[in-house]
Amino acid sequence: MATIPGIHHITAISGPAQANVDFYAGVLGLRFVKKTINFDDPGTYHLYYGDYPGRPGTLLTFFPWANAVQGRPGPGTVTTTAFSVPAGSLDYWQARLAEHGVDTQPVTERFGQPVLSFADPDGMSLTLVAHTIDEADDQPPRALPAEVALRSFHSATLCVPTVDRTARLLTETFGYEEIGEEQGRLRYAAPGEARASILDLYCDPALTSSRMGAGSVHHIAFRARDDEEQQAWRTALVDLGFHVTSVKDRQYFRSIYFREPGGVLFEIATDGPGFARDEALGALGTHLKLPPWLESRRDDIEQRLPDLTIPTTAS
Ligand code: ZN
Image (cartoon, rainbow, N blue to C red; front, side, top):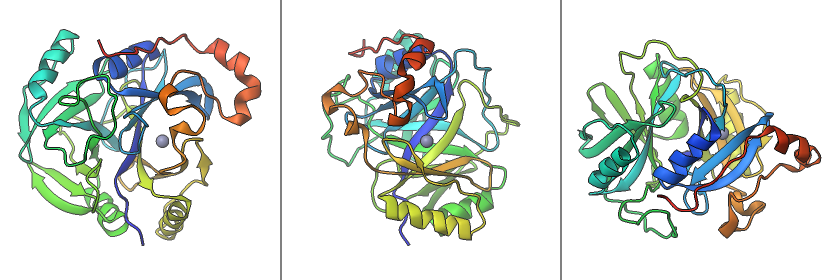
């Protein structure tokens, strides 16, 4: 049986789309790799951010709901999303975030690495983890200098009421290993590749109940290298008693979904075909892309979506 190489993408709900793109592309300097819609709710954008080509392990995506209620993290949700940044870059980030009016927590250390925590415009918890990055930086150009630019996800923190059952799924089925415990935080790592390979299980005692809304993570997706591997995961998970959806065509990857024992919505998404399937690599994110089955409704869909100005350089 294959193992999961790491996180594929994380999808969250935001408030108004423009504030979201101003923050993630403009302030954090992620590349805006795709402007499309929620295929299950075509009146809503689906915005994708990542590295230059939008590789799995770098992809943070949003469903912006202009009138979303405020979400609340808690049991059964992904409570924090963490990005890797180069060692020594947290001073830069503290200053940059302050300049843009974003409050940050004091830098602390976690598992020997300095971390900087803050929230996005909708209150979603984000962390930058500074460390030596092994993977060569072969993904220029970036909006920000390579010495400070966000790389891939470092990790995600899941709050689950039943740690043992979630941990068993991660270790016995996905192939993760427990690599440490610090102040009640259990850390797991996928074997092999370094990118986006870490998951933490930890519940802040202050988080007693969750509510889906702006600033909430909707689901976390894990990587399958190809369709065969995804099919094998589907079979294995069904055999374990999970209710797994059929394969959904998300244009840029194919997806299956199920709820893990702690209540977090998990997805397993294929690495391919990727974001260059309907736009040139240099032009990713510049046009509203619709799946073929919704093209005939383009005029109606475009009319209902708010205008969006994508920052071309991080300012
Ligand atoms: Zn997804």
